[in-house]
Image 1 (spheres, helix red, strand yellow):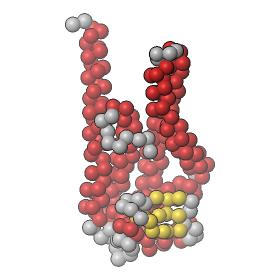
Image 2 (cartoon, rainbow, N blue to C red; image 1 turned 90 degrees about the vertical axis):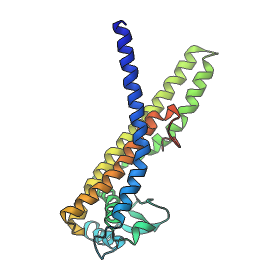
Image 3 (cartoon, helix red, strand yellow; image 1 turned 30 degrees about the horizontal axis):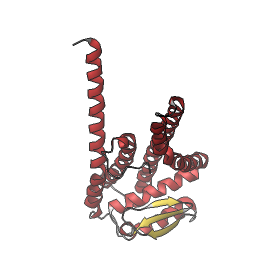
Image 4 (cartoon, rainbow, N blue to C red; image 1 turned 180 degrees about the vertical axis):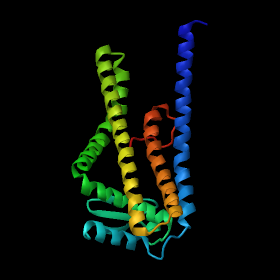
Length: 236
């Protein structure tokens, strides 16, 4: 066996291993978040309800400018335009899981307060990416069809497909960074306003780490989605 053959075998092996690890993470992340969330969902940290804690933080950190609303769904919590929306399971709870989730969304509010230009740019990039990546597969399919008509047209569409694919991946990487920062803000809020002891902080970090893994999983799912081996593949 010559050197080139060995190199090719090694590269293929690394590629296959990467695919397998990525698939394992994408399949594990969601179930892990649910497991960790439910574990600390039954660990109560305060007599204060989550929406009451969020309102207190709003008053202290934002002069009451951040509204707190209840929304439908499970773990459907999000921050948008001066309001944090808490899912029913979180809104009326007093658990470590619920506090961590709410403070994570307030962590986003801090990002928009402290670094508005960066967050506006991030939001704009997400909108652009969501739009552009819808053309990834159509462009690729057109490129395949054009292979039988005009080689250079086919190459052009293939390159355009790759570019839209990379734009989507870049947006996913940016999301991981933004979510990580929001979780760091959440821990500081919990220390300051929830009066968490060291053990409770560790538990909250486990919940937030499990959530972060789902964003990494989302990136990997986009990266290997073309293999058709992931469930409900989509960029967003």
